[in-house]
Image 1 (tube, rainbow, N blue to C red):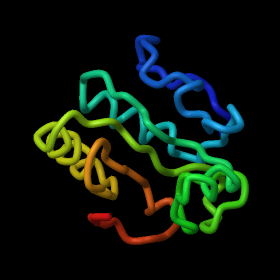
Image 2: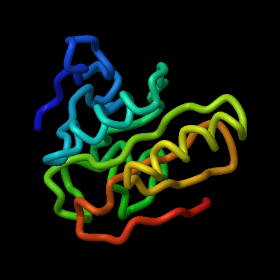
Image 3: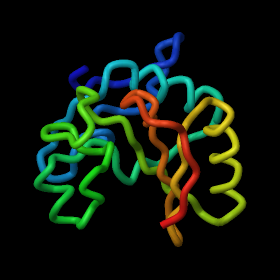
Amino acid sequence: MNLADICAPDGTVLFRASELACRATGTGILAPGFAEHLRNLRLAWGRPMTVTSCCRSAAHNAAIKGNAHSLHVYDQPYHPVGGTAAIDIAVTDVSHRWQIGKVAYALGWSIGVPKAGFIHLDRRDLAGLSPGLFGY
C-alpha cells in the first residue's frame, strides 16, 4: 500500500502519511495489512504516538546503520513482505515504554527495546517469522 493517512472509523487521523514516510526520500510503501495493524495499535493505545521511524529506503537504512534485515526497509527488503512492516515510537521513560509494549504485545506485535528514547514495533509475522521480544 502506498502511503496515505491512516484514520479511525470516524475519520480521525491516527497516523499521517508524512510521519510514516522515509526521512530521506519522503516516500514509502507499507506491507499489505500493516496499515490495519497500525490502526488497531493506535486505537488500542488511545493516546497520541510520536513516530521516530517507519518507512526507510535501503539507502537511508544503510546510512543510519540500521539492521540489514530491517522490516523498516520498503524498496529493497531483505524479507519480501511488500513494504515496511515496522515502526519506532518515541517514549518518555521506562514506564511509557512498558505501557506501549504491553498494548502492542497483546495485539501480536514483536517488540524491540533499545537502550533509550523509543520502542521498536514490527509485524514480523507478515514475513512468516515468529513474534519476538528483543533488546538491542
